[in-house]
Length: 484
Image 1 (cartoon, rainbow, N blue to C red):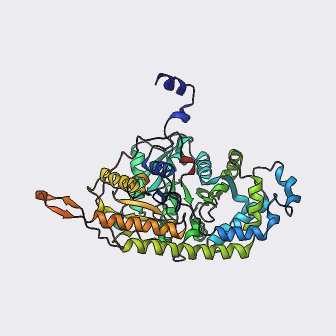
Image 2: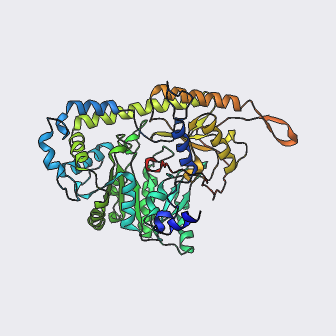
Image 3: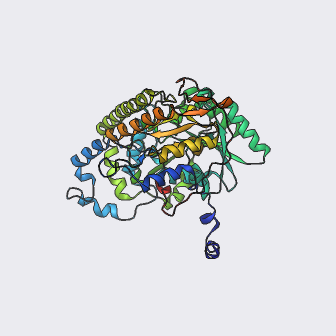
């Protein structure tokens, strides 16, 4: 113990302050999977990874394109002539053709309803780096950003750990399917002012992680009006833009502001990546797109700490500039996501489990309130631990997304093959069937059966305040770098 304390004094406060968020239940589930990973033949009783929001449904399309375009790689005889140009130093702007290809893809992923200026694109190491980059540009230590909850569990790491900014949750609830309201935004903003906290902006995720829903046009307009009236920034995380699968209802913030007459566009910024829409998190392509010249100029200097490798830029520039491929990929990805979502949710419906109605993302927001022993955070964690340890599924508890209502779980369905999905659904069905038959003590110690009955349109839940969301468990082998 003494040696550990002494060694900590040799490190910076940032390195040892524990605010990276790794000690949460969200990451505990990852550790359970890593200890005992499922394999259909080698370990069929292992833990199935359903905590990873990864899109593996269209790798065959990308692989086919790579086979047909060997010249796109500098590691093939056909592409070797570009090796020296790609290997030498590139400036912080990025390869011109890469930025043009990204701008082209961003436009097509949004239905071609808005165009993006390639000169406003900043690079970073994945969405994690992009989030931190934009925060370094906009906030000083102690400044705060409002974020509607439930939200991505690693935002505290991405946005706050090294920048020393802070998050103020704007709590949304199931009474309106967790929709952002102007009243909730204003209440959180006023409370921050009363607490003498300097609010620099609002961050929204559209489509939502973990909800899998998209924000409608009127909500987005209301959000833009709110930030303009208060002269604060709006950061829009749109990394799931091309995962909309059962309607064309996704509306980018860029589409909103191009139609608004009174809007300070300098306050609007977009975070994007290719990790979700194309399933390429390993390529570490993060993007900040800003309408502010100052953010672009200063952010470009900061981007030197997290550039995308020139080799990656070179290959993706060719791929993203291929209009026929991009259009085919986007259409097929949407179709496959819709099919997978349908298979998964219908499997849950057979045993009375409902999910929040959704039309995007790589996951479902699953409602297990009626399976809680008690309507508390502790009750949620008891059920979650049972699902991880006994059912052998790594799902993510709602409390790790800062959801105040116990009983919600994010379940990812696009990071596995069809056979594994079938196994996962069967495990859930068997678990629910077994648990609903167990007697539960109620009033006068009478045995009552747990009911699993939900409404797919409106959920009447008990709201619970949950200030304690961390688990004491930790591991030297960290899944944090892979978190999504």
